[in-house]
Length: 265
Ligand code: SF4
Image 1 (cartoon, protein in one colour):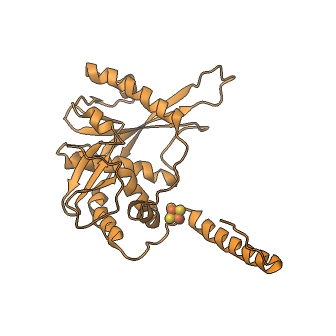
Image 2 (cartoon, helix red, strand yellow; image 1 turned 180 degrees about the vertical axis):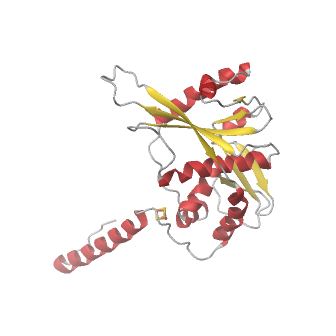
Image 3 (cartoon, helix red, strand yellow; image 1 turned 60 degrees about the horizontal axis):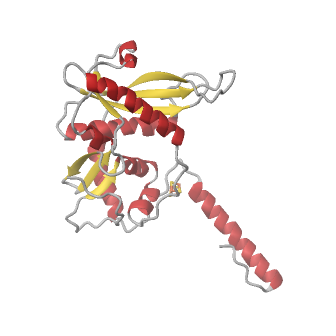
C-alpha cells in the first residue's frame, strides 16, 4: 500500500501514521541539518531548481534500452562490454520502485515510525540471485567521468540508501552497485541538432551500515526545540545574514538622512 507523499505536514511524534522520509531528504539532513529542519518541520523548502530536462531525457532513453533487455532477460551490450555478469532484473514492482514522486521502494522503520523511500533508476541481477543497484547519471564534461569529486558523496549515499531499502525488503543485494554515466561530447565539429554521448559504467562498493544509525538522529533533529546548526558546504545562510545586515544598515542611514521610511523587503 502506498501513501500520498505530496501532503506536507510537520513531524508529529504522536501520529500513528508513518512519517515519510525520502532518500533525498536523508541526503539533505547530512548536507545541512538546518535546511532539513526548515524543510520537514517548518515546511519551508528550498526554492526549486530548474528542471534538468536533458538529464531526464537521457534517463528515460536508458530505461527504455535496458527494459528491452529486461523483457528478453538478456544482458545489455554495455554490461557485456564491461564484463558484468548480470541481466536487468525483471520484477512486477519495477515501475512502482521507479516512481520517485509517489511510491518508490519503501520500508517502514518501526523504531522511528519513518517510512523511508526512494525511486530507483534500475536494478540488475547476477546469476547467484543478488541484486545490483544501478543509477543513471548524465553530464557534459571534458575528459573521463569519475566519482572523485567531493560533492559526489551524494551519489554514493544514494546507491547505499537503495541497497539498504532492498535489503530491508528481503532481497539479497550485492555491495557493488553501478553508475551508468552518460557524458555529452562538446568536442564534435558541429552540433547538427545531435548530441553524442560517451557512456561509462562505473562500479561503486557501497556500505549501507550508516543508514540504520542516521534515522534516530533525524528523529532527534525533528523533535528538537533548538534550531539545528548550519552545514559546512553551503554559503546561502552566511550570504543571507550578511545581506540582511547590509540592508538594515542602509535603511537606517536613509531614514536618518531623509526622515522617510524606506522598505528594502
Ligand atoms: S546554509 Fe544553506 S543548506 Fe543550510 S540552511 Fe542555510 S540555505 Fe539551507
